[in-house]
Length: 220
Ligand SMILES: N[C@@H](CCC(=O)N[C@@H](CS)C(=O)NCC(=O)O)C(=O)O
Image (tube, rainbow, N blue to C red; front, side):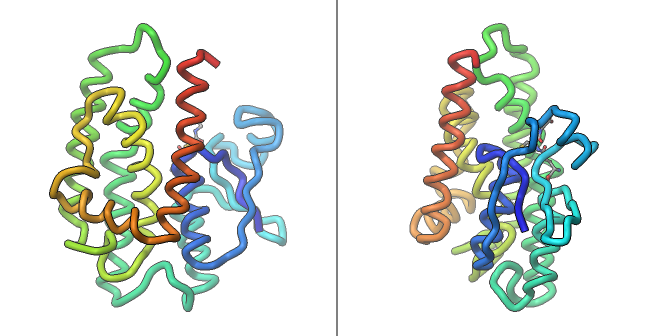
């Protein structure tokens, strides 16, 4: 199995981290011909990464669906632990982030390196992102992991965007950093920093995000 995606993509990172949490060997490859190429359009006509390619050649887009597929294949491994309620909470955190916060974070990422960026759109994205994160926070467990006492899909969904926010929305655009202070996201972030698997992944992903930011600032 391989995952088609780019390292700075938070959705690609979600799947790579979930696979790591489950102890699965998943290699990543860039979209053949590039993201906007006819080759990649044949793989995913929606034109989005990531896409999972199974060993028998099946193609599966959408990061949450890919994670659920890996979970179905290996339910005995870590990923979605606990009761039905625990699993629902993990899924809900990922879903709420995707539905109510993700688009705003993407909008801000797209403004990096844009000299005449739309200030109204930026303000709306900052407001929307803060509101979306507050919704996420309301559904999080008190500690230590996002959905409870064990790591789950929820941590894998939240870690990449939070790394992005710490690099872009907070320092560059003035969003109140959700990982500092006393809120649930801040307490959860401390767990991410002290858990070797998540901390190592966050460091690597941060480098990928930093690389993208530098490229955009340089106008590439
Ligand atoms: N809902 C999708 C979102 C994927 C997504 O938006 N991927 C971005 C990269 S982070 C992408 O492929 N963007 C390319 C484009 O919009 O042209 C998922 O969860 O996989």
